[in-house]
Length: 447
Image 1: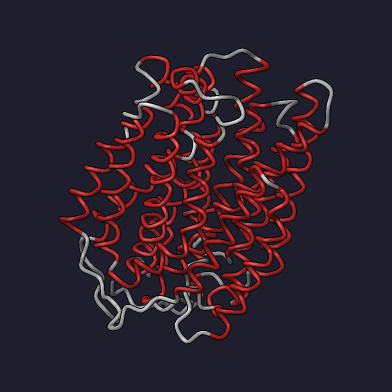
Image 2 (image 1 turned 90 degrees about the horizontal axis):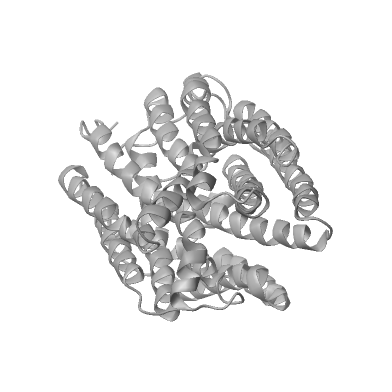
């Protein structure tokens, strides 16, 4: 077995910083959106593209990003992703008009699609000892779970006391810090001898996922086209000698169950973010900063769940023993979202953290280190698609419910709770990995 790199814990710190930047960017712009819309003269119909452009590029290009990381080496891919994300953030912050802002957000999403699976695959191949892996994934899971909520807080603070543009500029020093540290401590990773891409597979996967996200955001009629493209993608991957997504990765029962569980949990979670944002600012008339502060109970609960529960129990119990109850607790929180927001936030934070920490670990276990990038990309893609589907579906339900705004949120929250219960059932039935300390086979630690 390869001796673990002694710098892996220092590397984890810089990987965590990069992941925090990605997680923040999913929501930090949301609270700034009204100010950006007014400053750049965007219409109400077009304002959602600031969020959607990022989601489209991120979700649609993740598999390609993971494959690129496997081909060119994770260290190089990580640094390129950081540089590109920082540059796109600078362009967006200085945007003279709304079109440039949208383009910059799409560019951020594209580089996030390279950066996110690279960060996760670095963890997957660097931490293989069960207790160390639990700690490393607790760091990653707590950031992935709470970063979006922290983004609301930072977005409110920056928008209210500086300007909306700083919600983009703030990424530049974070990217520089992460890149400087990563360049010093990340080892060079192996690259494929023959860097050949399944170009048709890339086109089908990217086209299918982009079309799906776009259809749910703005053009439901494209759902059929998305389904056709994704079916063709699966057929292509089953036949080609060099697939962009080897089907054995997703057909493994436990890994496939983890991907499905992540998609369902994030679908419900993004619905909670959407409802609480509008509830605080529209129904309760909070300022952007007050709205951001109102998310703190969820952030604190997520950190507590990651460190006090998930990281301690993950080496000792099967993943589904954490994931299924965690999803049930989150579902209870979702049902209480409108009636008792504070308790709901605490339950959502605790429940989701107990799902996400073991899910990200399980999703990358028993994978050839040379394919860790695409396995990591797949779980990230599940997260992005889940978030897009959840936000679009639950928002449509809330609007279609009619009546007062709070009534619409309550109806949609009930549906969100159902999605989270489905996640609990999925994890309980499909994920059958044993506890890591019960003799789980471990991959090589070589990067």
